[in-house]
Image 1 (tube, rainbow, N blue to C red):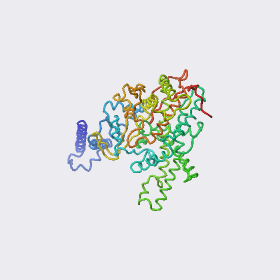
Image 2: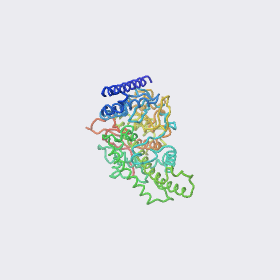
Image 3: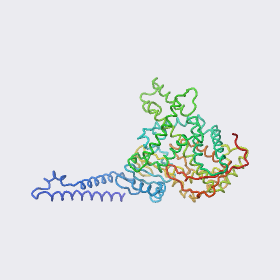
Image 4: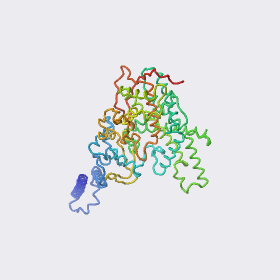
Length: 555
């Protein structure tokens, strides 16, 4: 562009002036009978340290400018070598979330812009159509290297790429389906956990309490039953500690997971990298202990859960290799073989555990909060459920087609709460052009879901909680394609079907059983969330008032 060319010319002239100045200064310092040519061996003797550093700096800046490819997406000016790191630090010091800053950049630079973090190019996508186009492209479907893959040498379905990722994703989906995830048969398992949660909430008898630990435990128990074959009691202190560690790490990682996906940031001393890694080591030890326990009780004829199925796959791959059934060298890359298989099982278990716990539990926290803030909406949901389901049984997945307003409320909660405001980054597998802009290999691509879900082109009055936006003129719920809380494309959320079942069943059970109210004399309810890779509400208490006309659950 013209502006970048002028910058290059400016720094080129500065460099020439610098070289000319140093030659003149050096020559005048030599004895008069010595020519400038003969003075060359003595030049470095007369250059002070500051001059050398300035020269090196100018050379690096010139190299940086000349080395920039043309047609990069537009973006804010960055410091040489540092890029936008100072701006990011300034945002952190001011308590400004990255997604809010990116929203401002999007308004200025358009649907695609670029920032630089040290030597890493970060391309931010602020438009649904652009995200859809990019994330369906095979060359833009990688995951970037992360802090955990580089420092802890951790693998897994979320961190892998290429054939290993395809192999792992297919395996995970196949095994999860074999244990009922996403099928109607799994509804009973979720319903049983939801009933346990209802009992816990009813035990408070309308007194104030913080719902977060109960929601986290209930949702985590659903995925734990699939992965570990076990559920945990609501007062299990060790398990509650693990959930707290996971929540803490999500907070420490920050918006978009910058600390995780740009490993060079770990060298900044003011970032909480030691705590992040220490917490993750505890989670790793938990996963390793689970795997060791499964090894001791492993029965190939009776696979109890996902962990057993993974151990069986590792064992079968080892047997196939010994018998010469694997093509030569394939075992060296197989995602479930040998040392790589051992790393992958730990990473994959933690991937599924985290994905199946945090985001759904956080969505439910927002759901309850929005019902307290919007009591008329809460009453309308309850009335619809009573009309369709009645008071003699609990809601079922089969009721969904008739619960139009309830579905609209869930979608509006997902849109406005925006659980992962900067999505999960992709990485470019090779140099590629997107909408005419050059995207260099290994660049991060960040979907700015915050801006997408508040785009007035698709969402009139985007800051308002309006479930009616999802109802057509006949009152039928219609989900627009721009609502992508589970992302889109080849690397969309692997647990999408499970999360949808959980959200509907837990939320509809809540509305069937309780009316949620703000406790008297408690602080005003805040809809401004907390930062982190997930967008969670500020801590709050509630009163769960039982709807007395239900017979209750059997003990």
